[in-house]
Length: 108
Image 1 (cartoon, rainbow, N blue to C red):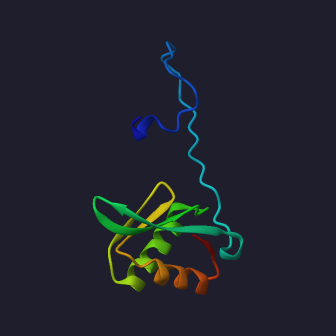
Image 2: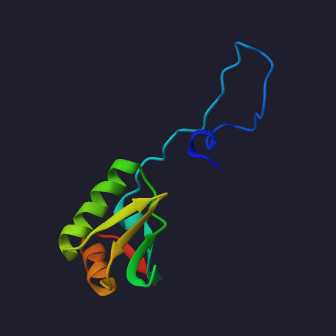
C-alpha cells in the first residue's frame, strides 16, 4: 500500500464530488523516558549487522532527535522508519548504555 492512502479511514471510493477524506494523522505525545520500554535487538540486514530499537512512543521529531544522538554517540549511520530506529553496525551494548543513561528502560 502506498503511503498516501495509508491514513484514510475505511473509504475506498466515493461518487460525491465534494467528498473529503478523514485522515488519522494525529501523532501521539511523547512519553517520558522512564515510562518507555525500548526493545534493542541485533539484526542482520543485507548481510550487514545492525541494531534495531523498537517500541518508541512519541512524535516523529523526538524520534529523529533520539536517532541523531544515538548515531553521534556510536559514530555510525542509521535511520528511523515507522517508529523504529536502525543503527548500522554491532553497537548493541553502546546503544543500551546510552539509552539507560537517558532514563529509558531497555529489553533485549
